[in-house]
Length: 443
Image (tube, rainbow, N blue to C red; front, side, top):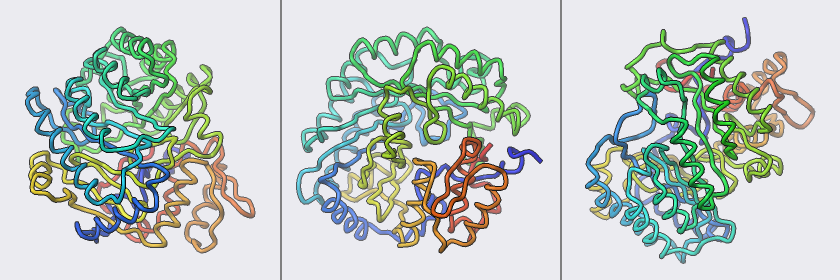
């Protein structure tokens, strides 16, 4: 049996530990407020991260597993923005002092669904209530087909220097199947505009494992992207979860590159990235040597949270908007997922959380091990977790990791199986292994 087949199982992507399906849901609004107040006192001086979820899209990308709302009615923009501002005010009411914002990320959905004027209004409303850290990092996600020069200029004037464009694939048959269209020319134009305005870091999202992808189409897409020299490239494994996202039922497993062929798509992409001087950073991420993500990985200060990999190691993350997740380090809380219910609860003056988790001491220990594996590719040996050690021995036999007297180190071959290796420490998973579809597969 080859390693891809052996380790191709469902596993979390570990933007948190515990992962959402294993939360105890032992949090109510009163308890959440206590966590917020305590975290602000402990961590505000180091800076707070702010994630703002903007769920609207004009069309459904069928591959997408994000929480979205499809509409062409742009009258929804201002009511949603006013609700975001009210939710932020709920947090301000609990903070004992002025927040220091170190990081803002606009995600979605499609943040550039919103007009430049409305985004400016939202951000100015929030920024007028805070201090900004000297080493702040503001970023947003943009669709190449609707991110205008006005969007780029408006956000740049507010301090945004980093932008991420979702490309996925340039092959028309793939684009037509996943209902996600953008030409190379559109991508080049929006990237040229961003650089002309002054953006210093551009990320491109690509996905392997999409329907009808081949070695040839992956090679073509990546070769074109490399000519544009984005500072960062995220090369994600397509997560086929039709039980969660019905839009993915537009195609079936027979249309997807699976197992060893899917892995060969990744290997082709990685080869092209390395040849173009990109370094392998964390899971699915590549960066040029002049980018902060590369420096953070090299200096072992890389961090991972619900926004993915970040150079900012903040311990208080406030998530605004429907489905957003907040993190006080000792607790997680997720907002209501539907727009209307989210707006109603906020407008009634309550935090719109519908599930949460208070981390135990054991959770915090395991969380740190998984963060170390995800961000540093190594972690100290913890002899209290005998079951994990047994699993690590199997990885060692397959030359995926190296076990020394004091640490576990992931080898180059093991980077492909990072989720599997982290899973060894996931005590909550092994206590209750899913018998139904919960996570996407690792291959």
